[in-house]
Image (tube, rainbow, N blue to C red; front, side, top):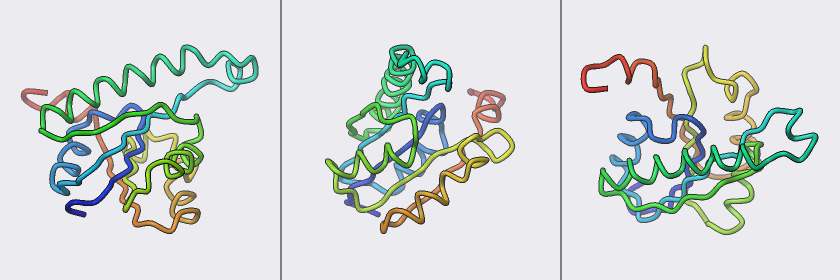
Amino acid sequence: MEGGKVLVIANETLAGRQLLDELESRKPAEILVVAPALNSRLHHLFADVDAARAAAEQRLTASMEALRSRRLEARGAVGDSDPVQAIADALAEFPADEIVISTHPPARSNWLERGEVERAKERFDLPISHVVVDLERERAAPGG
């Protein structure tokens, strides 16, 4: 959606080439990138979220640099560990026109295995695009 407001939710795929290409092709006016602070159940039980937040912040920093290298301006935020809840929280402050969810390929994606994209489509009345980022293929490609 050219000129619109795009909410991006992604974990490890934040700086993936396929996601960057998708955003660049849309030419959005505003982008908010949300990286869920993913945590293990054990750490979550003991409220040990510092490491998860720090890792999410690192992913966001890499994503912001990658977006700037494509001349795309964006804001970033660390979100809830549940990607659908992270979307809901972000939409409360960022009235997006559409949502882009980025995942690993099906064989390696916990989010796809748990049906997170479908959950988001059921919950939110916005266009939702799913972008698959294959980081292993990107690293193996020339110049990757």
